[in-house]
Length: 373
Image 1 (tube, rainbow, N blue to C red):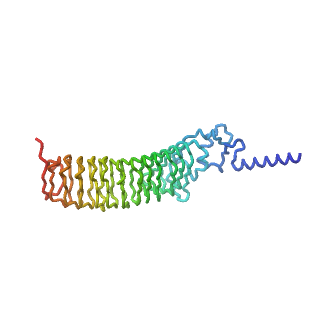
Image 2: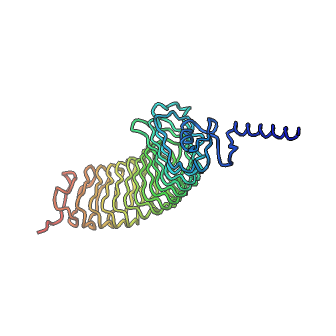
Image 3: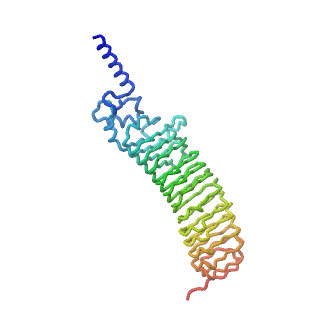
């Protein structure tokens, strides 16, 4: 009898402890809805999902929550409990301007949520903590966008194992961004501040748009399907595109690069590399599809366009170029070479038949193409 009473007391005590610790005594896949298990903002979703109102969130109840949105109506200092929602597909977070306490910025840990497909963060604040999306294997889109008045500081970001990531957009300030090995990544847009951007082995990457005054290192090893790149990076000293033979559109401005090799790129149609003040070497030989080339405001002393027989527009003003051989450029219809050292132009083999399609110094000796009858 005493033994039975003792067992009953121990059992009751165990149940009390388990309930107090937030452990479900109803089922192994349930969790008690309380402040220990859920941050206030997340608890709202747990309470709403608790359809039988028993104070517990079962895995079945949690599985019905596919989308979460957190906005300016809530002061958020934690996302505790969000991982109980294992079927979550979309996460939206709007960071309010008044949440600018740098020490109180919440970490966002969504790692391991296998059904998560979309993460969208819009920030009016100045600081976001750590963003951990590791092993979110169905994640396809990540967007972190600040408003027009703020730079968003991000402590760190982990995207390792996001093997289905398709699109990455970020406007924050973060020390480094590592997207290497994400083989399904197709589009990258970064308009913030970082020192290192690693895109090695992103074999399906097609388009990238980068504006960053602090970017020093851009790695593109194994990125063989890149079609378009736009980059404005005042601290970037080198850009190796020699292996990116499928490029069609290159925009590269205001960098510190001294050379750019695009030779043999038969698909390249548009090249805009103006305002790279230290650029002394540009190789476009073999770029047989090239139609538009602008390289003004650079340190170039020469340029070879003999193999660019589809070239239509050439802009090389404010350079140190001394001569232009345009005898193979029959389709050339516009030329700007103001502010160069060119003294003589033979345009007889081009499509430029008058002054309207030419911008050069008045002292240049010009031979135009014959006018059609």
